[in-house]
Length: 409
Image (cartoon, rainbow, N blue to C red; front, side, top):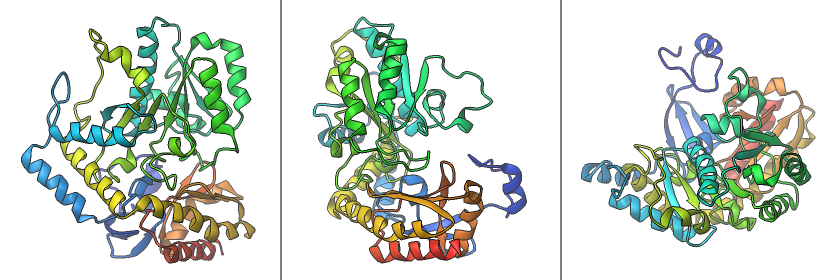
């Protein structure tokens, strides 16, 4: 059907208007159904977020119970909903850096903007206000607010807006030496922070080269540059076996941005984890950080997060994510022998990419996949994204891979 009044994100609206929208009506586990009743394997867990799967009544009930008690209240000043404070303690207990503070946002883009402002304000508070430049990587995606768009390394997302933020730089995504070269060029005394996705997500699902993350983390330590791990995609189990990629790779980030898997997408919410040494100047007394969001730490969202975390723990879904790491690699890797496939990127976490040889085929291939019972998504330049819910079985992964091969022809 046509789009009516809805303006879709990241879309050629003329094409959508002409060809109709794909309307999702319901979901259960690793499946979704469209408005016509057709069933699909959800290859992407929505937009990287449905970690516990679709249709979890337990989460809906938890949100409803909270909304009937108090839907939300400001957490500015000394206010906070009780459940929001409880969620902060629960998150701090699983943080990669012990003693971390938790600042809630409304989503991933908010988390990135929050981290961007905080790193600059931190350096001001410790007497080094010249450290203002923030550094991102090619291919990186950091949300679509002004700071995230400026930081990101996906050129089409930055075009035709003019200069969004003068104090942002971009370096090579896979070469730690390029960070050293930038430091030599502009001086560490001017750099506030380096932002890195442990696994590049929307930019095409690129796994970190062996040793890369440890190397850039050490460079940041050596040159007094804050390290910000963007775990909006990888957080809350998607990396496989651990709550966070930062734990798996021992990154000990100064700040860590999260969203998506925090509530498994049932209600919008994000959180920034702030290491104690970064929080200290703001907790010493007399300092106001004039920043926050009306719906940051929303009580109903906090209830959804608590219920989602309960499910992840009770059903050992971090272990299941690790199983999917192996299963996706096993079933998708053979697709690399197809002439229309350039390569398959998999083997770290419940994420994978099938890179098409002709990038122009990616968007049409999304629709072809639907004809074979799989709801998928193109990412980066010609890659097909696979980031299933942790409840997807090995048989379902095999079925999904078989559908991809059939769609390739």
